[in-house]
Length: 550
Ligand SMILES: [Zn+2]
Ligand SMILES: [Zn+2]
Image (cartoon, rainbow, N blue to C red; front, side, top):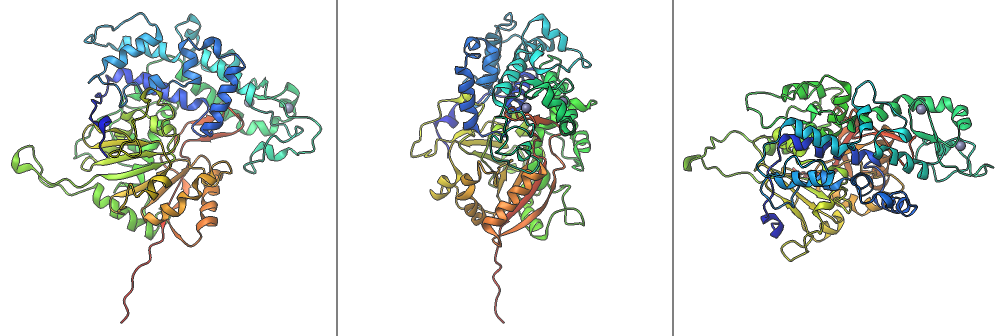
C-alpha cells in the first residue's frame, strides 16, 4: 500500500491559529451546497451558473473561488501534498491569496493571535468595512441577498437560479423523494408552470417562494421550518463574522487516568477537556465537524452510550461485533517503553473503511485525530473510498499515478502523529473488492462506515446495488447514518428489500447521540433542511454458526 506519495514529507499540524481558517473554510464550503447533493449534479449546476455570467467576472478574486471551486485551497492547505515540513507554506498561501498586508512573509515569524484573527477575517469574509456589520453576535441575521458577506450574496443568487417555488399550485419539477417533500403536494396537471424562488421570506432571509403572494398563501407550511432556517442563516453569517473561534481549538492526547464520558456531547466535551463552550451557536459549529469521528467512536468505544440494556439499542449480535473490535481498540497495557526492553509487538491497525466518502474526507486532520485520541493505545487506519472522495481537496491534484505497487492510486497520509493513517482512493469499493485489494477482512480489525450513504435514495441506490452484497460478505460491522429519520428509514427499507434475511441488525435505528447540532440548507431546494449524521444504525452480513451433530 505504500507508494511514492507516502514517502513525501507530510507537514505537521500548523499552529493552532491557522486551523481556524481551514475549519471555517471547511464549514463554509460544506454548508454551501451541502455534502448531500450529488456531486455531479452540482458540478453541472455550477458550470451553468458560471456560464450564465456572474461568476466569471469574479473568478480572479478569492471569494468566488471559495464558493464555486470551493475553498479547497484553504481547506486542505496542510494536507498531504505540501512538501515543507511545517506550516509556513500554507500560511504564505493564505496571505497571498487573501491579499492581506503580508503579516508573515518570514517563515520564522511568530504568529500572534491577532494576526491569525486578521487572517481568519480576511479568509472568511472580505476586508471591506461592511463586513464589520457582522461582527456583533446580536447582528447575525441578514437576508441572504443583502448579506454583508459577498459569498452569501452569491449563494442567494445560486438559490434564485436553481431552486423552485414549493407552492402547491405549480407543476411538479421532479418526482417527490419523501412524503415531506413539498413536491409531493404539487400535481403534474397544474396550470401554472414551475417558477424559481425569487422572494425572500423576511423572517428567515432565504429565497424560497416565487412571489410574496405564494409565500403568504403557503405560510402555514413554511412556518414549520422558518425558525430553523433563520438559525441556519445566523450560523452561516457567524462563520463569516470574522470573530475568534475558540471552539475550534481541540485538545490533544489525554492522560490515561482520565476516563471519558460518552453519555452526550456535553459530558464528552467536558471529560475530554475541551475548552468550555458556552454558546449554543458555538456548540452547533463545533459538533458539525466532530460528529464524524465521534459517531464512529461512540459505537466502537468500550464506554459507548449504546448497550444491550433495555433501550440501549445494541443487539446481541451487535455486542458480539463491537466486542471483537474493542478487543483490538483497547489492548491491555504491555509495559511498552522507549528502550530495548520496552519493545513490544504492535497489533495491526484497525481499518475503518469510509465508503462513498464526500465532505468528510476533506475534514481538517485535527478533527479525525480526535478519533485516534479516544483510542490512544491502538493504531487506526482510515480509508476513504468513493468517486467523490477528493471533493474539496483540489490542492492535492493530480492524483498519484496507478502503479503496480499502488494499483488504485491511493493517496497516503501517514504522518498524523504515529497512531493514525489516512488513505484515500478515488474509486468504487466494488471495483477494489473484486480485485481482492483489501482482503481478507477480519471482524476483529475491520469496520465499515457509511455517512449518509443514500442507499435507498432514487438518485444513488443504483450505485450501491453491486456493493451491498459485498459489504455483507465481509461479515464486518457496517455503521450507517442518515440526514433525517426519513432518510435513514429509506436506507433501511432498501437493505431489507435487497437482502432480506441476509443481514443482522447490530444497532437499532434511532437518533444519533453524537449528531451534528447544526442544521444545513440544501441550496438547490431550501425547503430541504437536514442535519449531519442525524440518525444512526448498524448491520452486518449474517453469520451462520457451525453446529456439530451429537
Ligand atoms: Zn410560486
Ligand atoms: Zn421564513
